[in-house]
Length: 267
Image (cartoon, rainbow, N blue to C red):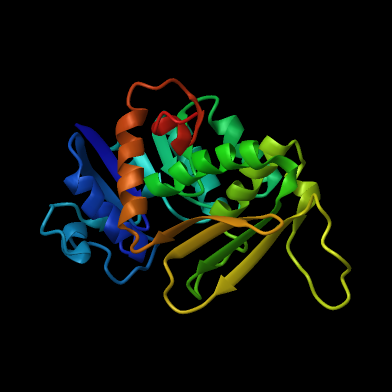
């Protein structure tokens, strides 16, 4: 059995991760972590998540939690993830992270930590979304430069980064196949007399509102026809199941930086 620690265990994502870990063969919840001063510290993490009593009290001691685990699951923010990576590296433990919004410098720091421990870092842990990444590569290869590309993503009103990490990765996937530099062709803003659309650009459009879990559509728009590759998330459970699957896959892997394409054998 792999011992799993979850950070942010009392949050919306953390509670779903507890369920996923409990439902995945080969995994057991060893520790559940929350911030200092959280009102539920000391309570049973299973009861907080509605998964039944697990005998795992909510703690704020990240160092002890990581020391007692084989792998830490992290759905937080880049700054927090980097701190978690430092703790995992110090203890020689693995990390699975679904955090998004990393700057190039922060990504480089993740790569440095991954030289010493196995790390799965993915903007989206959903199996369906990662299937979409594969489909996007094939679509871009077939359609080539004859189609304009636009990416539209929708999320809940509490999401902090924009565009989503998943949308950015979709744009990157298409750009790579078409031989374009994503950072040069991504267009995040159109307003006023901005001129005609350039052929090489990839439009990145963002919608925020309500409780939308996550929706992504990539449009390949040609003359007289349009192809849409879409994914709609109905709940956070699919992200949690993907993270649990990544934990199982990591067992026995050498140090390195992996993503869900590796976990699913799609690389």
